[in-house]
Image (tube, rainbow, N blue to C red):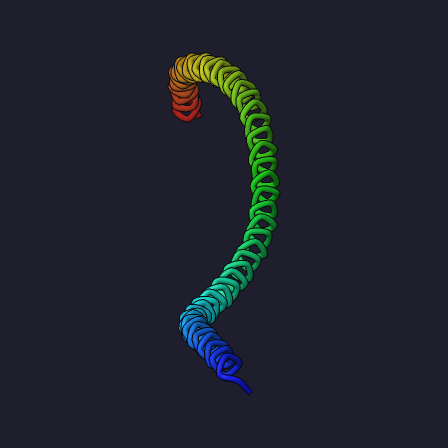
Length: 179
């Protein structure tokens, strides 16, 4: 081989070494980029894991919240049923109260009518009492007059009988003296 060929080979070897150095430098850069990308990838994986954990936490929270809302909805439905039942009870009680009011009004009217009748009867009874008292007063007066007349008649009879008795006594005395 000749010197030229050797120089060419050396030159080519130097070129290849330069290329190798260049490729090594590129490889070092690529390795550095790969390391940066690995670090970035690790960071992204960590962030992704954090986001997944946050998402899982959020999902769990949302599930719990959803369950809580469902429970509240069930309780609300139960309360609505209770409220409807209470409203029905209130309506029933109001209808009873209205019926009682009507009954009280009717009873009040009947009592007022009865009171008017009783008042009227009482007034008539008072009039009858006054009439009876007046009749009794008249009867008492008549009885007193009759009694007074009887007393007068009895006095008159008594005086007449006394006089007759005295006459008979005189007659008896005359008869007994003459005999």
